[in-house]
Image (tube, one colour):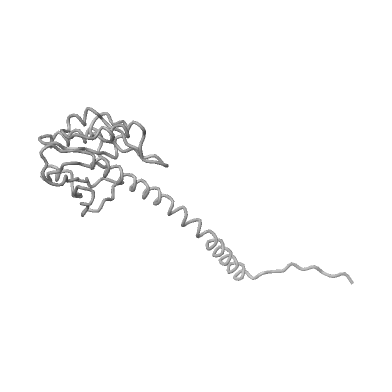
Length: 189
């Protein structure tokens, strides 16, 4: 007597249940990878912020404002993405003020300005409005660094460097230690 072979039939509800279990297992296994992909860009941004903080602090600490008898005031425009200095910053020899809008530049009495997404042309226009006194300008969005800000941060995936626009620096009325200028040529971080 031959043995009949029968196909094992899984009820359709059971098949759906097993699919859910399989998908759940796949999700749990892939969860660490998902977190890595989420955290990697934020780590890169945090590294850029840290580099921007160090570079800006260094530039300001090696800058002299003629006739200034108080700590210099760094004004950060609201569109900045890579500067995260505390607004109570005084330990490095300057204060930080986060402005609400570009219009606040006219009344904020800034000694240094940190531009965010303003174009080089917008930077030049805003600096022209406050040109009655010495003002150091540093920018995120000015990779060519030919007009606008005196110092321009350039963000690469693996490092952040800065360059200097000597014409803008000369017009700014501030004096920057020549060692800072040499660092910009070397692609300092």
